[in-house]
Length: 495
Image (cartoon, rainbow, N blue to C red; front, side):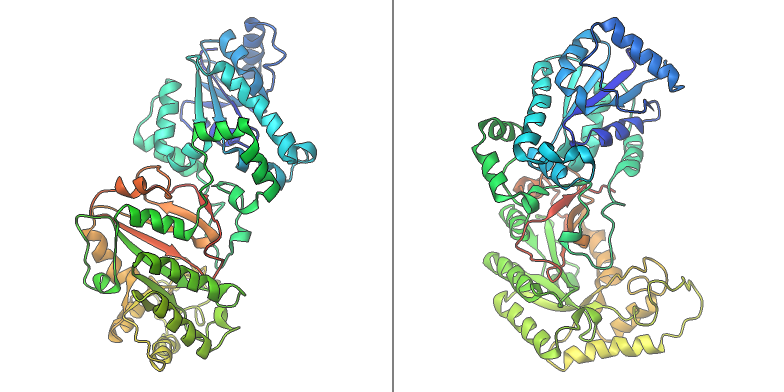
């Protein structure tokens, strides 16, 4: 069975995803169905016969590599790997706290009952992991962390393909990434809160959902405490202040609004743009969350830009002009380096998301232009003069007109001495950068985009390893959730 690749590991630990990634290689075939047969195999010959028959039954080519996954094989991986040294065995582990949450919040029947309790779930997971402990020194067994595949996909897949003797290049791995990343699952929506985030394809869910008694269980359990220490799972939670602190500790340079207008990029440091799109003032926690964000920045003395929608926007319907004016004053009082900008939205009222793409057709912008001017004038009346703006996305994508991709809006804003970041500032700024990337929280899930390595964004090394002169845009939506609470991390997006 020199062509067999067996994937096993923790239940709810990524075996299906890893199987699909390997199976997306142009030379590899997927053997359908979980075949949890290692326990009952009494000889190497019996095992070879079983899988040879299964390959023929599935109408697969026996001369090409075949991958199959079955978490239930995990306790017996050493037995199988010793019996079939010509085959490759890959064992995937995951943060045990996320494994538990996945069981507790899953919908399949087998995830319930004892499997949904911390003791029951971890007893089963421990029996699986001890299978790997028996096999860890075998040359045909490879260990993979779910989190490494999630945040460092390219390097992790390279190591897997080297282990399985499969040919690859950067383009082939990029194609596999495109076919198997979770972007569709965590796709942007018009407005979401963190509680709406789909669990599939994220890490760190434990920080949101793990019960206090289960936290205590993990802290007191020596077996899992040792496991977590060995494989790099700590108790750090993904919060805005924590990410900000890592950037600051790494000596990043935080760009001010003046520097954006001057297209200034510090060639000796990583340059960070802190943007906050204020997309919701209707929730009970919106005002506090926004001010907590300003407090986190004030502690470090870093500049940030808060982008406000039109005062009459539906997302502000539960507040009023006086409250918005007061909020802006408090932001600037707390963080004296904060600036207020326009979260431009002239299009949504007149060209809703469901409208067709008008392309290059003649469009009457009379009402939209009038509304654009009123947005600027309403804030000007209370002493806010915009110099920059960001385009509000409202589910229209690139259909035109939209707030971002419509030159007429950009020109009108320039007539009012307002530069749209998306179309005016960003292209020129990025030309000066050695590299550009982003961390965004659209949809309530933190997603690194275009970052070239897989170090945790909570680790200062993530930013120290970036090239000097890079520009990193860090975009949050603090009105949509409580900004000091933990978030989850989406799969790292590579360009």
